[in-house]
Amino acid sequence: MSDNRFMRTQALLGEKSFSKLQHSSVMIVGLGAVGGYALEALARAGVGKLVLVDFDKVEITNINRQILALDSTIGKPKTVVAQNRVHDINPNCQIVVKEMFVNSKNIDDLLSEKVDFVIDAIDALNPKCDLIQALYQKNIPFISSMGAALKTDASHIKLQTLNKTKNCHLARFIRKRLKRRDVDISKILCVASDEQTDLPESALFIEEKEDICSNTRQRHTMGSLPTITAIFGLTIANAVILSLSKLAK
Image (cartoon, rainbow, N blue to C red):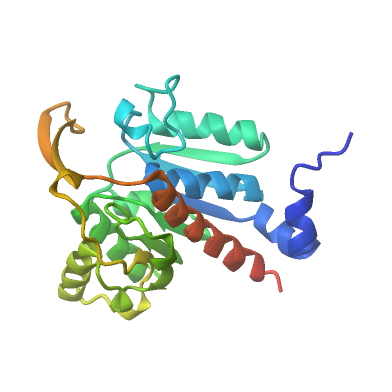
């Protein structure tokens, strides 16, 4: 029996473009709320190779918005859960797992893995800026996710360059830091929401979180909806799919 799992994607893109997708590789850095949905879409689109980068484990607080977070996956490394899920979708997908916390010291090693596209779904400010700067300097195609927390109106989500973002606290911080690093922010493609938020104080709270060194620390946490974070991830994945498949034309 022939394997028709991707027949609808192939029918839409055409045989040549779909073949390009099957021979493409994408790195996803951060497998949380945004990165998980981007991963899901890329796997179901038939991307041939996926490089999965994360250091974290699934927590019960992830269940409200992360597709990899289930009662059965709590406590497991996100990279392992992601690898198993992708192989359940497409057993022929080649997967490279990198269980690591990205920082300025290991980025060069990370990016020595040759890929066609990178998705930045990191939520920590310094590592995110380090990764964006490295990708920009190495001229590696990528899309970065800005802040999806506190947003509720999906109609404000758009693919745009970083210099055009507004009403996004994360994007504002990143713009300032990247300018100091001589990064042309008009060249940085990202997904962001320009929704002006006006939410109750309860949407911001302090959460205890275990860091990479197993130390418990407090961090400021913002409320988020599964719909908005998913749309961020799916918007990024859609842009990547179209970009990779068009290379065949």
